[in-house]
Image (cartoon, rainbow, N blue to C red; front, top):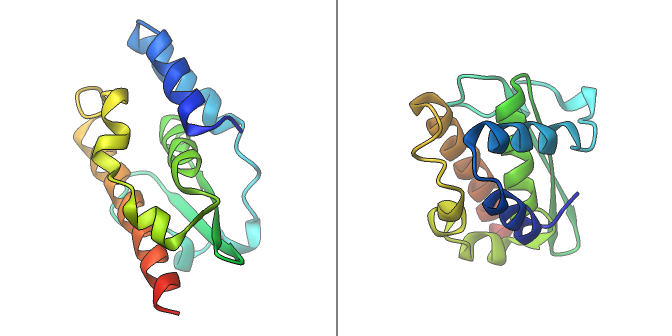
Length: 136
């Protein structure tokens, strides 16, 4: 999977929002397959209109994220957040300002209110995972 900075650069290169949506969909298609065993209520993200699942695994200090959605664009948003947060420590995750990090993507003006709410529900869940890991 591409780095968050590479994704941001590719996204900025695309002028038309139809192309940007297609790019998000492609990001989602390239996600690592999500394990069926954890496609359950415990891993489901609340507050998303689509079904979204997030799995966090720890490798030392690093938190690795996997995710999936039943909606193509939302799956792309999952991929974007995985690129932003996965592989970082809990402290690093909590230090990220998600609004500043995602500002170059201009998603607020191009996502439906439901998808925007879902995006922030995913961010909230990732931050809660990091807070839980930090408390351990």
